[in-house]
Image (cartoon, rainbow, N blue to C red):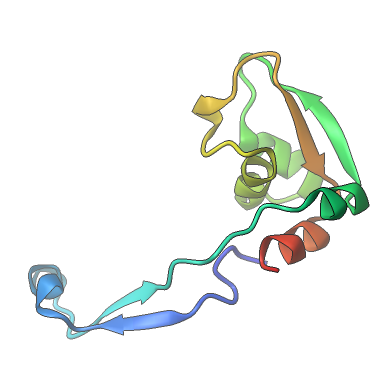
Length: 111
């Protein structure tokens, strides 16, 4: 289930993108609308089973995603759930909560 699975696709032919279209020999630039992402409420978090992970030197979000979901592309779910924009923002020793059910976590995300 990719991140942009249900995101609106936009076709953009504005003059602003003319240089880009010219260099790529395109008539229209295809873009994805910015998805609206929501942080789970306390009630939603209490219904979501998680496991804990203490962040240490050398950890990577994509490795955690592969370990728990079998797909490294879901690294952003762990980052979003814990309120970190990137792994560079996570300090050693930080406690991360990893939602165990990816489908439920994605459902809460797109509520």
